[in-house]
Length: 617
Image (spheres, rainbow, N blue to C red):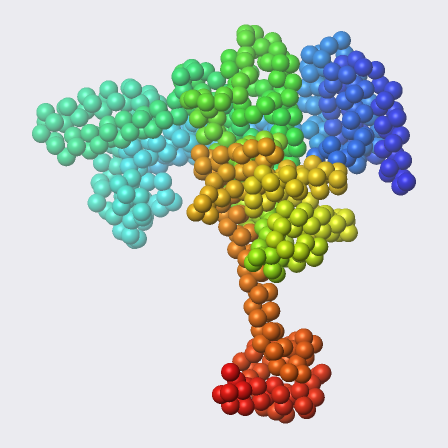
C-alpha cells in the first residue's frame, strides 16, 4: 500500500467517526489552505464518501481528494443553516474546487462623441473627453443591444473610419450594401442629414421606442405636409425599422412576466452557465459564466444557484433550469427567505418554457464552443445526445464498434473514436477476430470488447489511446448486441454507458438500442446527425478493413497456385514487388534474387506468367 493510499484510508477512518448531524465541512491542502467547502445533511455519510472508491467520483472530485491533507467541520442545527453558513464561508475563503463566480456587474454607459459627425458607442466608464454619456445602466448586454439597435435603425456607422477625414478615401463596407449604414464615407450624405439621424438615435435611446415612435410619426407628418417627401420617406423607413426591432424582441418574450432561465453546457475541461433574465415578459438581460470543469451537473447547478444569487439583490419569483438540481427544496427555501416571497424552481419539459430553456442551453453551448475552439453545433449535439441517453454529462469521448465478414469469412471489427463531436482518427483501431469460427456477430463483438478492456489494463497509466476509457460505447447493432456485450463490462467492474445503433431497411440510422427497448432519435436532429455520422464512419472503417484483407487473400492465392510457391514465398514476392502485376513483369534473375526463392521456383513463376497462352490459362 502506497503512502497516499494509507493517507486516504486514515482520512476515511476519521470521517467515519463524524456525527450524523447537519453541518459544513472544509477540506485543507498541505499548506493549510481551504480548497473545498461543502454542506451535508449528515456529515459522516457525506464526508466519508470522498475517501471511498474512486470509481464513484468524477475527475474534478478525484483531483480535489488527491490534494486533501485534512478536514474540519462545523455542526449546525439544520441543513438550512448549513446552506447559509456554506455560502458565507465560500465568499470568505474562495476555495479552489468550489464554483466561484466573478461579479463583474458594473455600470455601463452610451457614449455620444462631441463635435462634427458624432459617433454612438458603448462605454464602461465616463472619461473626461468632452463626450456626452447616457446612463448609467446595470446590464452590459442590454446596453450593447440598445446601441446596436439604434445604429441599425438610424443607419449610423459602426466602423472605425473618421469623418470628415476618411470621406471619399475608400469604398463603403458591406453594411452600406445591405442597407444598414448611410455610409458618410461616400460623401453622399450631408453633415446636416447625418447629425439629424444621430439626434433621433439619441432621443430613441433616451426615451425608448414608444416615445421615439410618437415623435418620429409627428415629424414624418410635418415633412409630408411641407412636401419634403424624401425626408418623410427616411423617417418612415426608421419607423419601420423600429417596428421590426420590436417584433424581434417578441421572439424572446415569455408569458411568465418575471423569471430567470439558467442552463449549463459542459465540455471535457470547461463549462458554461448562461442566464436569461426576463422582466415584463421580455428578455431584459443575459449573462455568461465560463469556468473550468464542474463535475456532476446536478451538483454544479446547485452550487451555481448559491453563488449567483449570493451576488444578486433581485431574485425573481420563478427560476427555470435545464436539468435536475441537487438540494432543490433547500435552495428554494433559501431563495424564498432571501427574496422575502415565494420563489419556485422548475425544470420545464414541454411548451413555451421548455423552448426558452432550450434556447438558453444552445447559447451556453455556443459560448463554450467559442471559448474551446469547437463549433456550437458539436457542443449542442453532444449535450442533446447525453440528455437523450440519460447521462449526467455529455459524452465527449465516444467509441463505436462494427463487425464485418462475408459468410463468416475474414471476420474483422473496426473501432472508431469521436472526441468532442469530431473523428479522432489517431485512436481508430482494427481487430482480427481470433476465437470465433463462422458468422456470429454477438460472440465477435464480445471478443472485441474483452480485448479492448485488456488493452486498457495494460496501458491505463498512459491515459490516451487504449489507456483511456470512453464516456460512451455505441455498437453497430440492436438490443441483442447490447445484451451480449453488457456482461463483459459488468465483469470488468465498469459502468460505461452502452447502446446500439439501429438501422432501417434502407441502412439508415433509425434509433438507439438499449437493454429491452429502443430510443427514437429522429426528433432530436442534432443528436440524430451525430449518431448517423458515427454509424456511417464505423461501418466504412470496418468494411474497408475487411475488403483490404480479402484483396490480400485473393492476391496471395494467385501466387500460391503456382507449383513450388507456398505462402512464405508468396509473401516474400509481394513484400518486394508490392503487386502481382509487378511480379509478372519481373525477369528471371530478379525473381531468383528474392530471399527464399531458388532457381527452379523462380523459373516456375516466370513460366506461369510468360510461358504462353495455355500456361497462363
